[in-house]
Amino acid sequence: MEFKISVLSKPGGRTVNQDAYGVWSNSSACFCVISDGAGGHPGGEVASKLAVKQVLSWFYQTPELGAQALAAALKAANDAIVDEQKRSPQISDMRATVLVLAVDTVQAVARWGHIGDTRLYCFRHQRIVVQTRDHSVVQNMVEAGYLEPCNLRTAPSRNALLAALGDADNFEPSIEATAFSIRDGDIFLLCTDGFWEYIDEPAMEHLLASAQSPEAWLQKLESHVIMNGRADQDNYSALVISCTGPDEHTLMPIAPLNPK
Image (cartoon, rainbow, N blue to C red; front, side, top):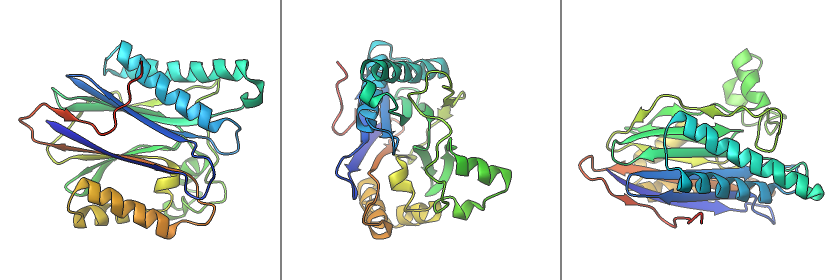
């Protein structure tokens, strides 16, 4: 199976881009990571870059794809951020979201893990078949029936997180325990909240159906984000991973990051 990765990461209306991403692969696996420094916490850009580096370094040393491996990699990132908080008092409150997608390129299966509100979607036949659950106040309000799902993106408390990297005592990431079988034509979208906040799921599907390629789809998505954004728009980042050719076991990542 062939995997092609398209990426973008923009500061939006901010002077500093606190988002970070990275990709590392070997002959049998591919690991994609995306992180967003939590707004309102000094050092967010430090936390996000540290998260990506630590996760990819962990997989570089231990290229495993099980649920326990994902949990261990995310814990290593959290520990690294907590340690840096102790060394640097000026960024002692820094936090970051993170999401990692781990793909077995031989068996064509995937697992993922995340904490915060950076999301993973999987599209099959131009329809969403997987969407991660945010660790946020508004997500809980929706699930409790206090907020309509259509109002999640505009609620006053939308940016309030219930979990993020950088918490020494309350670290509980969500891990996909069951391997997800990838089919020819599946497309994964990994994106920070500054991206998905300005484009809802029906629009994602509609634009995918009209796009000539995954790269063209990502461009359409970004145009939609910019059109619906505001002057002080948050940083926005996205990775699109398209899966084709069930008989081929090659990997073609764009701009890979070497964690050494």
